[in-house]
Image (cartoon, rainbow, N blue to C red; front, side, top):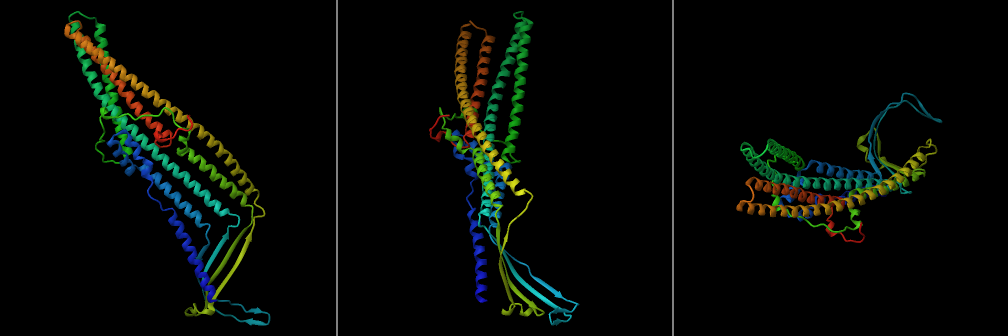
Length: 462
């Protein structure tokens, strides 16, 4: 009897230790900062952008929600693992027995009696995982957890890319507003001079109206730029997750530097995309589910046992040696008829596996397309920016010649103002193309799964 008590206690300690070891297995360092990928954003040589990314990491509510979902998935895995372990519980019972009828056991007669019963048992059940079904269920939950973690990573990549795009667009609008204000002031001078020419009979009414019309267009464009600036500013405030933010510190347009892009990117680059990894994990998860569905047809074996103390009338003797009771046994079970439910569940999971395979192929093709599109867009944006720089250089050269002509009297001041206006208009195109190129590099970063595409080895060009 004493040996049995020691064995039972040893089993209880073993179960506690297994649970403790597993709980420590999921304790990991904070990985969220790696998802933000600060090293990548440093390549833009903009300290303000890096500071904004850190604020987003610390305060954004969408990222916090994604992390909470990931932590919930960790707990779901722990819960699934707990189902693999034996169950140990306590259910005490204190009752008063008062039979009012005479009880007979053959010639033995037990008259009416009453007594109090004290029962303090520990109950244990354990489903022996002979076929590995419970282990497969846990693996399926683990893959679901991995899918959720990739969704969390995708949230970080998408949101930080959106923040960076809005940040550069805000800088673009800062510069466009200054540019447009110069354009409006210049057009006002041109309109005033054209009106003077009209009063002196040197031009027609149509020419005056055309200049006034151009002024209204420029003023309207200025209002649109200011409206877009306010909209993007408000969006950034929300993304930063700080209601009390008064100003977003940002670089000037002239301080922006342009990162390089490779001529080609390895096809292996898409292997780090969260959506592709999620599709792979989903195939593995459904594979586990199919195997679980097959094993559900097999018999199950449950070990059960109970050990405790049983005393009558006198509770003070509950822990005496002669009050100890125990039982143990094996309970085999198999479902003989379920109306075809198990077979239908197996077929359902097989079809789900086929669907997951098709989904993976679709994600793979979409990933390649997005990488191709992003790389092509980045190259074209860079070419357009170079052409815009070339065009503005030409306009500045023409403006310099116009100034020389003005000085020698071969060109009027009004014509000279028109030449200056052309320079400002060409600057507007250069501003837009430069920011478009910066944003195209961000989209390329997203297309390769939030990794530095400059560090990817070229094995196979896409």
